[in-house]
Image 1: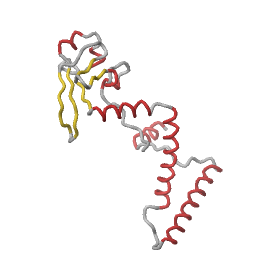
Image 2: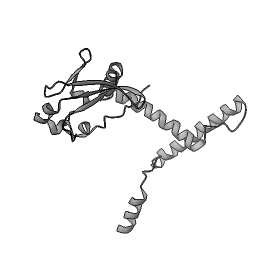
Image 3: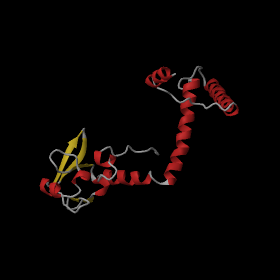
Image 4: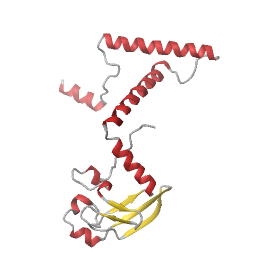
Amino acid sequence: MVTPLMADHSPQARAAEGFDKSSFRIDWTTRTVRCPEGSTSIGWHPVTQHGLDAIVVEFDRWDCRACPSQKRCTTSVRGSRMLTLRPKEAHEALARARTEQKTKTWKDKYALIAGIEGTVNQALDITGLRRARYRGLQKVRLQHAFSATAINIIRLDAHWTDHPLRRVRTSRLERLAYKLTA
């Protein structure tokens, strides 16, 4: 299955120079994590969050407060960093997938799949292919052939008349702002 993973939405990952989870070195055998500045975690707590196994790693409050990179690492009122990790296999699979999806090969492969998904979505929206209008395999095949022909004609018309197939949508607020300025 080729699909992009959700990005890390932590404040540290969103910051330009923040320390996200990939910045930390995890030692699964000793159950410790080393931060980019060299401090070692003091707690490794297996928990269940939202019905899934997870590991909460905590760092010493005093180490974090004395750290020169504290502002890049944590926004916690407590002043120390905590990490939530998945079990080893899941964590490593996510890390591999996130690094792989940054490669040109993966992006090219996904672009092809996204085009196919767009075609399927267009077929469903325009011709209602989700439900067959007729009974019998031969009649359903004929319906699919006519639907494919209709989509091809719509695409050819858009190509010849230089009209894009999908219009850019504007929100009601944008339309109102446009009317007020005109």
